Image 1 (cartoon, rainbow, N blue to C red):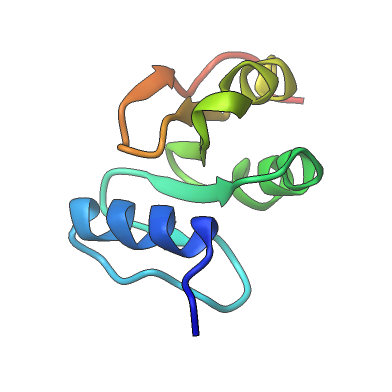
Image 2: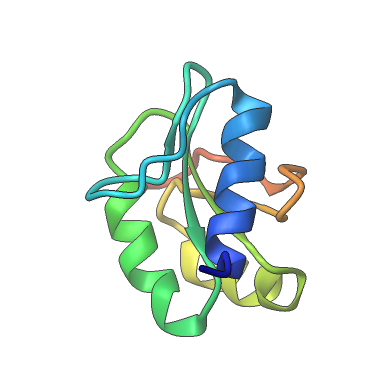
Length: 97
């Protein structure tokens, strides 16, 4: 079975964080430093924000082509944004609704 873009990104980030990729319900990656949900389509962004926003140091990881959309969707939520390699492009924090 071929791995999806979502799975490849999640596995790479989980390895970098030193934890396992959660394929079930809940955030994809729950590490000691941050919680990460991978979103690879525009329809995933809003649900991904809702899934991680109540966790400690919440981030959305997305593809390079969706970084600008992810930054827009996460404005004012306290959720940060990172690229597929785990480089932070928008830090967590700020106003939470």
